[in-house]
Amino acid sequence: INPSNISHISVDGHYLDIHHIDDQEMECLMIRRPLTQMMEDLPSPPFIRVHRSHIANLQHVSKIDKNKNNYAISLFNDQYTIPISRGRIEAVLAAFETLS
Image (cartoon, rainbow, N blue to C red; front, side, top):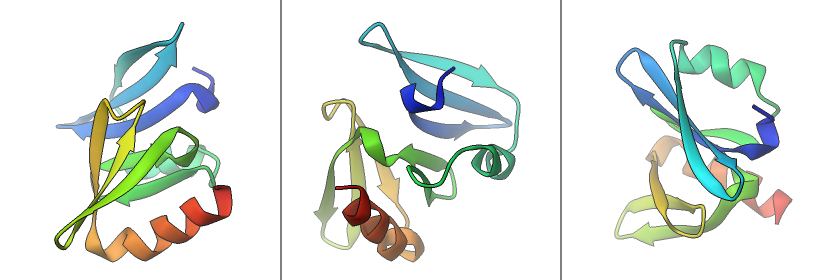
């Protein structure tokens, strides 16, 4: 998978769900690998760890929402939403600003 096609990566038990765009459709590939190791192999930016269970490609972010004290990222034309942890919000907002 070309890294630029990856929208986001989520933890699913001992596996990772790699959500990527293939022919304008969102596909999901499941692999067995630690999220920390996957983060080391991806270019930063545009990939950033937004939560203990999620990595996002900031090039595919359509918006960042704030709902009370919670933040979330919308991806792939708002079809996917992933949370941003409170401890990572400042880094995510700063990285998003530099790419915008």
